[in-house]
Length: 161
Image 1: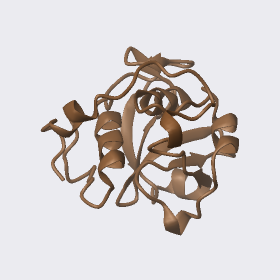
Image 2: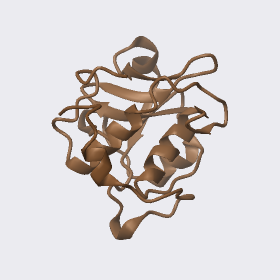
Image 3: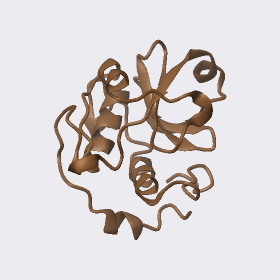
Image 4: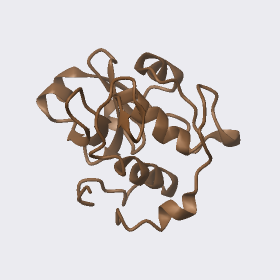
């Protein structure tokens, strides 16, 4: 489990705080190329799985994820924004305080990293802001697996604001 100080949702709107808490549940999950379930994730699979839980549909492909949503300047990142690296070949979910959660690479697992770490700082390729919560219930960029149970997420003691 992640230390709550690492993933702070104190300054995030309630809906985005729930999304970040949900994403953080998957820390330690093994990386699996093409993976899109708690048995194993790749980077875009983690992002699409987490957002689907909250009714936002998106493709399981970083290029499509980047193209589908409004761009955000680095100095205006908010929790829940998607951050891209390596020519938009890698994606994570910004959690605040200069950190993001992502499925790293083969042999590793889902973890929280800092934007200031050399590889991420030097390879930063942009950010987008999915419409969350989605207007009208959901967006239209891929399948949704289920609707959110926000009440249960807010009652989670895993992350204290």
